[in-house]
Amino acid sequence: MKLPSRISILFFFGLFAVGSTALGYYYYFVYEPPLKAAAQFMDAMEKHDGAALQADIVVSSDIDEGKLRLPEPREIQSLLAEDFQRGRILDQRRHDGKTRDLYYLVYREPDGRVYALIATEFDGRFRIVIPEIPLSRRHRYLWDYTWTN
Amino acid sequence: MLKRQALLLVPLVLLVFLSPLFAQTRLDIREPITYFIDDGKAVTGYRNSDRELAVMAIEAWSRESQGKLRFLESKSRDAALIRFHWIDPNEGLFGETQRIAVKGKVGAIVNVMPDVSVQGELASPASRDVLLRDTVVYLTCVHELGHAIGLSHTRQFQDIMYFFGFGGNILDYFMRYRTRLQSRTDIPRYSGLSASDVQVLRALYSSETQH
Image (cartoon, rainbow over all chains, first blue to last red):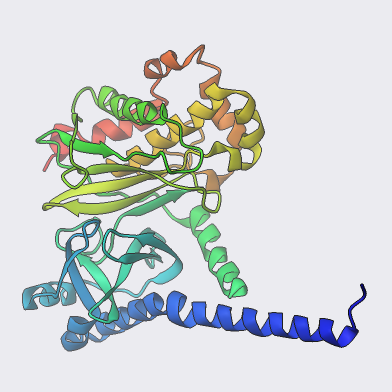
């Protein structure tokens, strides 16, 4: 049976509206918050803003187990003492942790070397996860990360 | 959204060609490195025998390190420094290694995708040749485990740590290993590491560079 053309147009219009809403929701509520957390972290590091950094990071002793805590003052000072140069986020990959989702932000240092920043939601906001012991040879806030495809 | 993701891929591809090789974090080898292999029964393409391939990969690195790397299976996943995890097909991914800390020690989660039927040009030949399929899973385990113990990608096609982003024929890469096998029992005879891989491994864990 041939449908009247106005129904077809309405159908595609509805499909477009639903699709756009879904994409918008995904972008603003799923994709962007970890990136925003990374941007805030990098801003705080660039400005040597300890107070902002305190709110932007969380420390992990075992990320797979989801063991997170707020940073101690000495950890903030240790981070601020780093020779920070803003890198670039190239991609993000979500991993289901045991207790929370972890967002691996594939991060390129200014010299081209690639690591990950990890973002996760903690106490209602996304923060950058700092490992309790160094997990890269570069900076305290970077994690070794590789993938093969 | 898709355009944004596509734009993100451009620098990703560029960095593969431009980035220098980078050093990673070494494991503490004063004690045996504990490992745990997840059950992959719920994972697409997983076979029960894949666990054995992961164990062979672990033994291969131990052998090639001349015993410097000693591995010990852990009864508990939470206590293991190296955690093998089987993953469902995802964007053509062979594997992925994430650095973790376990009770103050450096460890890693090694993710391996066992469903070779989705790996482009490998899919068809691997579906007809189970030894080729096992070769792909085994060499992926070896490669990802190499990252876990601290090796980086290389640009040399003969290396197990070679990154496919540098080009080359992927089927050839796996076939050169496959052609050495008469049966699955031959896998422990050939680690898959090149002379250069072995050199990097031994330098990384030489007594001069220990903690």
